[in-house]
Amino acid sequence: MLRSKGKRLVFVTNNSTKSRKQYGKKFETLGLTVTEEEIFASSFAAAAYLKSIDFPKDKKVYVVGEDGILKELELAGFQYLGGPEDGGKKIELKPGFLMEHDKDVGAVVVGFDRYFNYYKVQYGTLCIRENPGCLFIATNRDAVTHLTDAQEWAGGGSMVGAFVGSTQREPLVVGKPSTFMMDYLANKFGIQKSQICMVGDRLDTDILFGQNGGCKTLLVLSGVTSLSMLQSPNNSIQPDFYTNKISDFLSLKAAAV
Image (cartoon, rainbow, N blue to C red; front, side, top):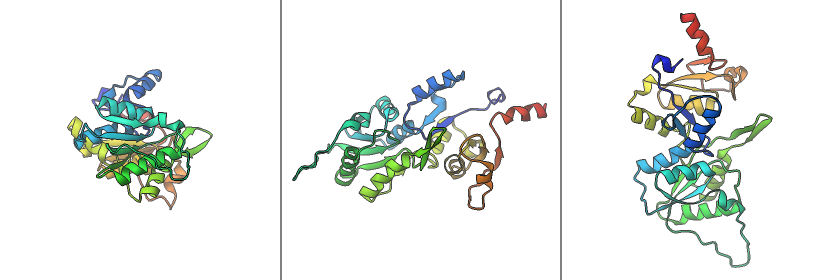
């Protein structure tokens, strides 16, 4: 319906475990036709950010995260190490043991990682602290994520927090609610931010992302945020509009006809 009205749709996610191609396949299984250029995952945002600053091709990226980040870095032509294969690595703390690290690592990218371990924390910490000018990039700082519908699970922010603790440095965040992806989108598609409406189910990422980017915002109550959370006196993030679910657009259309 939105496409028939000439609207451009873009899907933005903080989940960095999949690449755009993998998300395209997920949309296919839902019966939706979505092209790669309509998908902005924080895995892609990390690679796009490195491209936007002309990150040197002779430098490497150490990845604390999953396959999505590796695939996007590869597509962008960057050298990387780490990722899931470091998930099984252990450190034997013998007297006098010194952990070596690659001096050519110029950026450490930290995302959600189910294979997170002490080896990765130490390796990434050494790169950030000891390699001159090494960047510390986070795909997002989400406190929780929804891996199952039974409970909330520790999110990418917990992995990022480990590095903030060990390096005493703040990361550059490329996912929501940081404005990098919004600036990138507006630039790529040549649209004004005032023409964009950000739709999402989460106040601290989706709605804040829209507000930080200077867009209109629509909260849907079909996911993380309930009406009582929205109306709580403790909540300071107020969307421009809210509705129960995104398909409410269809009843609006019917009413307009």
